[in-house]
Picture 1 (cartoon, one colour):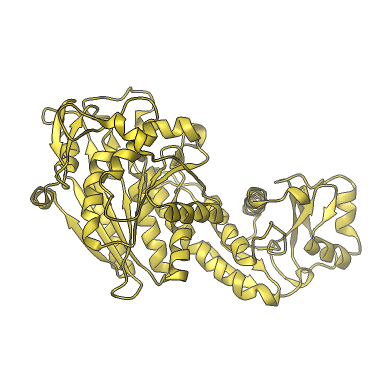
Picture 2 (spheres, helix red, strand yellow; picture 1 turned 60 degrees about the vertical axis):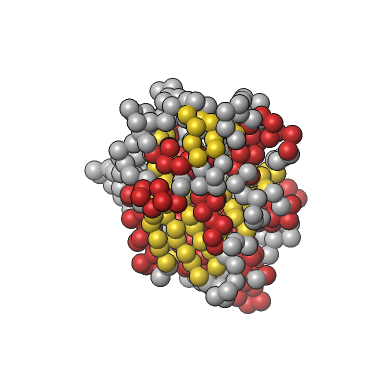
Length: 495
């Protein structure tokens, strides 16, 4: 899908379709008012008759409105003007794009930058339109023998006043790049485990590196053995698929500037290992590599936007399978840091691969490290499917990420990381256990990781509740790519 910015007045835009807003109570937006004047009251008459009441997300398509150059006029309900915030704006934009897709129009012009959304500026509105459009256009049909008919809508234009045109164009560029990163993360997450293996992830990283001129290093099992990554390798013991440690380097900032490091959990399928999961919904454990997918999506977007920032992506990836060689509950492994871990539950494997990746991150002398992982069911119980869990050993970094999530409408919630919880990880036989019991399971998982992140500013995003959807809408969400890109863009601006 292509995005562009257009100047001018809505009644003169000779487009296949033009979309304008209508508030609850039959109130026309400024663009709708302009069309109404040009049509000598035709638009208001339709609204007055009750065909469009302005309910949020409702749409009404009009053909050949007199005095209007566009072939079609799409009226979009905006809801209560006083209650129109970020969620409502995105819902209205989504309704407009979906309705335009159902027409035969190849292009739609949206008059949405004029809509007031709190203190959000035109660039933010444009970025959100591009993200929502990418969501609406997304299809995952690679594994189907018969594909659906392609949607005719190929271009979205945003009508902007001359003073806003540059900001709108910038927002569309950022939104398009972010949307492409989200779509990449969705594709990788939606692929089945027999296709998206650790080797496949490494191949996709290689493609990204080639296309966007990034540096890539892939560590094999023998390399990890030399580094002493006993924790990561313990998870891989039961699988026939070789583990990988993928290191992707985007050098967009000054050569000597310290990088931001993103670490993504890449369990390409999680059976739970010897601590085997129950069968229902186990197929969804192909999504256990969504943290890795989000890192690849974020790096792709960074490169497309040419952010003036150095970013390193580290992806520890393996399957977690039962087998004769698999790690057993009660086994003790030695991490790259030298700390020993009693593995009380082999289904708490994400932290075992992340801890070695965090230690590996030390060699980059990072400005900050953010790990992203579908880590705990406990986080789903705590926060549901709306917010990702955020933990950090640095208050300022936590605030940055929270603000980035609000900006991107890909929100997180700050959770505690108090030393009191560390008591639950005590082991009689090793430096620590890999689980702390049922109480505060997401917190103790973060506490475990914090023991390997003492040499840098660090944050952990638990995306177990936000990385994918179940039920009839089953599939990867691509979260938190938008949050990560918002965070990195702000870092690039202040670097």
